[in-house]
Image (spheres, rainbow, N blue to C red):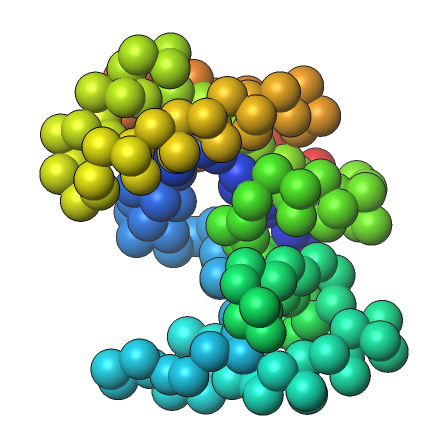
Length: 189
């Protein structure tokens, strides 16, 4: 039976980079992304059941009412993202260790529901100033979007104590190795 590993972090903290490295460099950990549902249309070459399960907004709402989601969020009106309990159970039954790349509230909800079966990791930037530098150098967002992300990051940082471990990403290779050690120890329990 697989376990669950939850990653949350403010935008620009390096979470996706760390998770990608962990999955690519350590296949022995048997990590597999949780396949989420969304009510948005597929983009490009996305396929149903691979990147996401694509549902209509009405189908999504019915599953919410039936209590089928571990966590979900309505990002915009009728634009939902969420994780089905049944999908997680299917993946863990296959022996996969399911990785969640979710916002802080979703991370806390999943941890609450699974307790010791889940490890929750919060990837933290060294400081808000460093986060600003990273977002500016990324050059993907307008200045007002960067300020919105920084305001959200300040709020998200208040959730860090609710996670099992906080990994400060002030040095990427050090943060990757610390994350690997924490995940490996958890999976060996």
